[in-house]
Length: 73
Picture (spheres, rainbow, N blue to C red):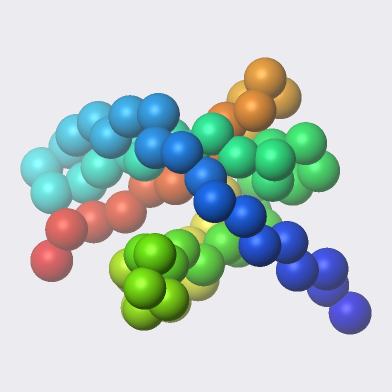
């Protein structure tokens, strides 16, 4: 069974990488043990989903950040 880690992550930056495509970099302890291709769920402070489905981690910086790529629709 996969382990579940809940934490408050910090947004490092959001960068447009193509039309309506963005890279979100988060400072997170997840970077210590995650591998690219694993999934995360994002929530806002009130507990509602920020994005309605799991998002694959696109890259990891072992200094403590993960990157997620998403499309604005």
